[in-house]
Image 1: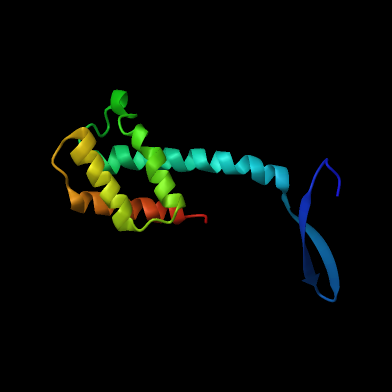
Image 2: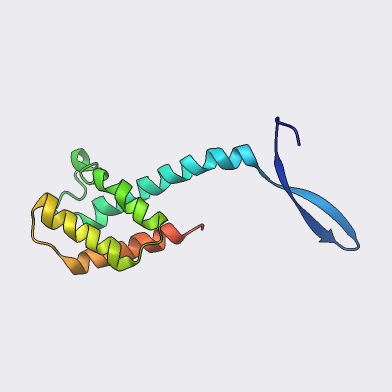
Amino acid sequence: MTAIKARAVILTMASSSATIAPVADVRYLAQKRPMRRNLDLQMIQIVLHWAWDPIGVRGIENAADEYDMYAPQVLKLLEADAPTDEIATYLTRVVRDRIELPSNPDRDHDVAAMLRQLYAIDR
């Protein structure tokens, strides 16, 4: 195999003859991973701003990044296939211990379930 490009191939049976079809360029997949991670972080940031929003800044343009600092940890939990309850517990602790507001475990559970469902799309 050359250093220029590595391709994965799959043997496809068409009628009575076999054909080889390229499936993926390894370099493309390596570049796609960080791109996918960025999209996942953006999705989490949007959900935290619009659905979770414990301090009530939903829709305020200047506050769109208010919860961005919590997105990387949520993504780690999703990547580790953490259960909904574990993600909800993290969100509840953020509200209670860092933001220092009364927690809303039902909301946190609903948002955690939403995040898991959205993260599962295209996987």
